[in-house]
Image 1 (cartoon, one colour):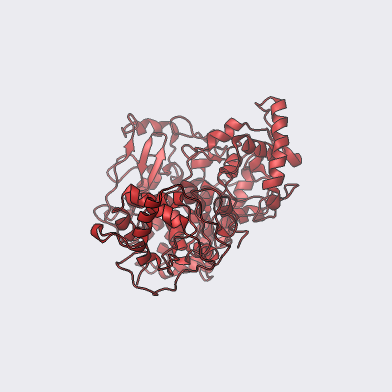
Image 2 (cartoon, rainbow over the protein chains, first blue to last red):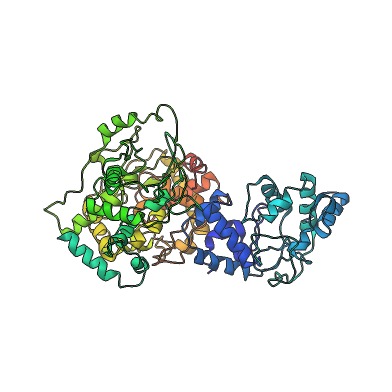
Length: 203
Length: 418
């Protein structure tokens, strides 16, 4: 399988471990259902990134599932967290949103869906550790502006629309500063209940 | 007679598992196999590629097709009475295919390949229409065309038609075999291969004398190689097996399809019967010229070319040799050979440069369900390195093409990807 997905390595690294490019995400160990949903979304053009749309356009869904399964089953070590240059105050704001959310603004805590250890849940919710702040803020921004969408109800779009730019910076910085646990598989399906319905994680 | 024997073969083939078998359930009102045959022919015509939008309902149209004259949107060909073809008669449908006119006499833009479909027989057109009538109707209005002045005036099409459109069903060549004629019928007619492989002029037209001589596909910036010149995509030197492998599975011992041709194999050619693909191969092999023309001379100063080629070898050994081999022999069929590969030695280096920049996957087909992908190097190599490695593979191992410049590489970084 590694030879078949050689096309992914310049951007995502071998075994999907990520590369030094700050905009390309690590794929290794993410839930297979999440990876499959993204591959299908890129194939159909729902998620727009021309180099990805181009590569996947003429691949079949079963093959995309194979590719998702491959990356989900890879567990190369997580990179060391990046040193951040944001203030302690910003980090504290990020921590607060991730751990507790902001009830007054109807922002749920990230961990309420992405898991107490932020390692995600099978099949469709990705972990949030081992990602770079630039990637996280780019994706939250894309959800906010509606350039990244998912199956309805599109929970990430709903949540991200309530975030300010300062919130996005803070959440991305704090998440990226977290030391990664040595072994961080996503929680099995149904480990905890979601606070609201999510098209990517059907009951 | 030819038609009947082909029909018999299709009936026999439908007993085999695969796409034909899946279609077996569908029967026409009279209980014959017209609908099933129509589905097969619609595959051969690749109707789905344009008439189905991404994430859209099948054949409901609405797919945007950028052209040099503006954006066209394909139409709804589901049998919806209000917005589709529900009220059309078989005569109406034949007229769109054969003459490029809507039932009300309105002129159809030639993005719909009626200049090729005009060669389709009445019986085949009727079968396709019978099949389309079995598609679930979708109530979806056609999106208005978005063409720039003056191309938004459909009356201009009268001029285009006078210059570039010849109406008429395919006439078999009595001096050729039935197989050759079947191949010609599919390639020139339903396959509408000429839409890309025949050079297109500034008015969006083609001429018969230039048929299948290759050209840059407008807007997409991929080069559709000549099918008549063995210096390009001409298949005169290929075995029938290699040609049929390429058309049906997307891979072969000689080369692999990427880009727009991957779409054609994915949506259309992989579903054709062995006999039909073989007929196309026989015809395509037959139209290729036997003697290749001499290679063109380089536009780069030779000193610059030599420097590029020398840098190119360094890049090649570091990035490419693991899969394609130091002597460029590849590991067919998944890693195509580069030594002796026609598509690398064409005068146009567009495809070779784009493959280095963008990488690519061949289509996933029944014959090659889990294809191997070529990595994109756009983010890893500079313009100069891309030019160098392409210059190297175009001139190494006895390949006889010319070096390319960093500017050539740079210009293709902004080529549309889909």
